[in-house]
Image 1: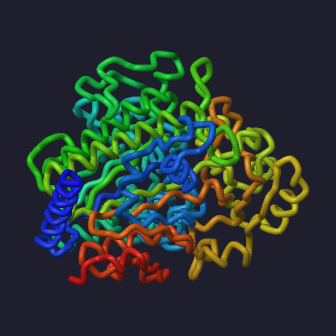
Image 2 (image 1 turned 180 degrees about the vertical axis):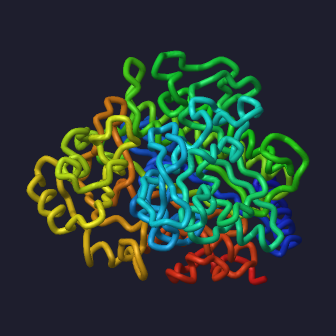
Image 3 (image 1 turned 45 degrees about the vertical axis):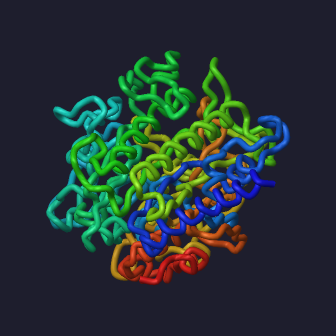
Length: 568
């Protein structure tokens, strides 16, 4: 009994210390840390936090995220962007807007008002003509790794940069599409997005900002003018794997030597279950520097008011078949992870444990709002549904009919390719008849695994009316095809899932908003990842309506978070 009383007294003392710390800060949120675990479904978090039969003896396997949920709001019915490509997926999170407002439909998309780059990009978008102030020809827009000087290098080929550096210095202006209306100036990623971002809003209010991602093109997060980020870091995920001296994963794996030396494993960080962990660990180290009040590479700075990074490991774990090594993905439609995906979730969770420990060690845990979500999911979860269809795709049939631009044509063997994954986003040639194109696609419904077609009013319901001229949007596609779940317009033998589509597995991502002062809550009401942006701005004591997309689309702050935020 005596020991029981002592334990209770000690526990009450600890609670008193925590309460005093919060009181000293008045519950104020001084920092927001945003983490995107690309590919992380809501069901992935449910299973890892609670356990699922057939995996880890039924025991939970993400203790750090589960611990955050004890002082967090867990949203289980979250919808990401549509299309669910990483580019519009991240845009939704950091702008509060859909492609209708941001103008970002896909990393590789199309714009009727722009002209090609000067030189052919690293991913195959052909260079071409641009006549200043003349009528545009229209062009595919490459905002993937292809705009970098050399996307086979971790630093993107940035001139004079150390092997692990690069960022916006790796962007080759001659690889950027051009705008004839401005004299054929190159369009940088931060000017390709049509709205401001959470980073530009916080930066304009005097806050220090930072973001870490996978391509230089994701610097669009800085917002128009490129002024919204004080520190941007983007080691190239599709580059050839190199040793990373001094980098160790949160689970203790050393990266000074390449962990997976198979030919496929070294071809790109995203091709290997082991090497992707070293890639993410490199970014975690950069984030830990920022938590410590430094830049990503260790120079003196301030701890950002708004910062964060994306993880790639979970998406690789659910989508890659590394021939001769292992196969990722799920065991069943209930979302039980296979061995490789299980290890990637454990790795990311251990990394989040490192991050939380750093916040505590630097005395900013109580004043930090932690937002964990995902740009996109991955489809299909059910391993029996995946179909790789690289031949009979919507773009292929329309290209055979001469209805789509050559830069978007799968018949262009040296080109960048069509905007197709487990979705097909289609722009037609000027003068091409949309109804005729739809008739072709419907006549091939079996071959393309047709699920649903969006065009005309069914498309303009959620997007602007496409075209070139007054009142028309130069970026809106003419047709979007969403195939049956599992059908993927790719002939790849190294993939077992993809993303980009509208399916539940593509769009139902995890979202956890946590702070030590929050009461735990699980929310089943449908919300969107767009609501993260105004919620973050409000958490930092700023007006959510400072975000262009919030004003344009009426995006709401997450009410459950708002109810637990301090009133400034």
